Amino acid sequence: MEIAPLSSALGGEVKGVDLSQEMSAELWQDIHDVWLEYKVLVFRNQDLSEESHLRFAKSFGELQPVRSATHIVGDDQPFMYIANRPVNGVPGILPNGEMHFHNDQSYYEFPCKASFLYALEIPKQGGNTMFLNTVKAYEMLDNELKEKLSGLSVFNVYDYDRNPTAPSDVYDAEAPQFTHPLVIEHPETGEAALFTSRLMSHHIVGMERAESDALLNQLFDHAEGLALRYEHVWQIGDLVMWDNFASQHARTDFDPEETRVMRRITVAGSRPVGLGVAA
Ligand SMILES: [Fe+2]
Image (cartoon, rainbow, N blue to C red; front, side, top):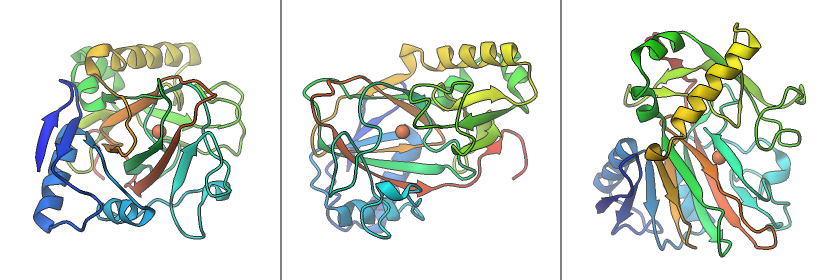
């Protein structure tokens, strides 16, 4: 196995690994270690059936069930097809267009720790996935701001129907929602990471709304700064996995006339713990 860095911010391409094959414990450990180090791993030219995709994801932990029944393929298979056409008779989810930066499932009590996204069909242009390193984003804040963020919690919500690009004041009361610490301690590396995003964070708990909006926007603008990004231009057969507690991702726009089909599996994580707070 070889790893080639993809940017100065995060991301590494893993070469010499065929994920459709069973792997040794040593190889798995190497992949696990570079995943934590690089936050985002890219495996090109993979030929992954649902079974082999599942086997690789499962080796990282318990799978996160897909919560919306309309997006399950089969009875107990945790695949989500992020697609703008039906797959196996199931309507696609998150069909078209741009999508702001987010950590997956930050609106759940137990967000996933890892996501595994596999490209089946891609548009000729666009639909790229941008990644940013939320550990570096936190590290690069000045001490005064770090102090200010200490102990703060943020309310996250995601209403697929009403706020596909960012939380609005009006959201379905039934939409998944949860409050998490704004700065978390990574469950495996112990690194401090920002855990608030433009797509899903609605407000900082206990703070006047205008002040909360200003502070959140300041953090989003900072984190989304170019130097912290890796932009993945997809090829069919790419498997990209990311550390959901140390990175965020966003999607660039693409032509809705073109087809984009991704198969995603997520692995369950622990409840995020605030920086400096005993678990
Ligand atoms: Fe996502």
